[in-house]
Length: 150
Image: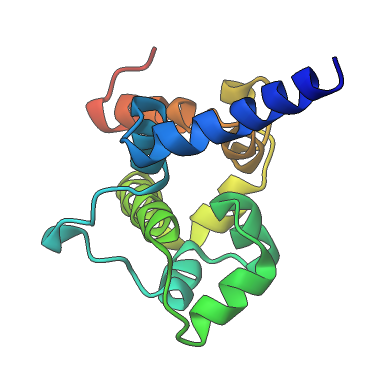
C-alpha cells in the first residue's frame, strides 16, 4: 500500500508535464491569455508622463486610474519600457483622455474624475474605473457627444 500513493503522486505530477509538452489546449489557452497581440502602428503607446499631464492628475490618481503602482508609473515616466499589457492600458487611457477632452475643457478633467457624480450614483468617475465599470464612463461620453439627454 505504501508504494501505491507514491505511484499516484508520481503519475499526477508527470501527466501535466507530458500534456504541456504535447501542446495541451489548456496550456495553449493560458499562453494566449498572457500574451496580447502587439499594438497596431496607429496605437503607439503614449508617453506616460505626457498622458498623465494631459489628464491633469498627480501620480497617485494616475496610479488609481491606470491600476498600476506609483513605482511602475515613475519608472515608465523616466523611460523604462512598458510591458504589452501596460502599453494596452495606456492606449485605453489615451483614448479616454481624448474623448473627455471633446466633451469638457482639458483643465476640468482632473477635477471631474475626483468629484462625486450623480450620474454614477454618487461615485467619483475615478471610483467607477477602479470598480471595473469604465463602460459607464464611455456611455456617459457617448450620450454627451450625441446630445441625447437620457
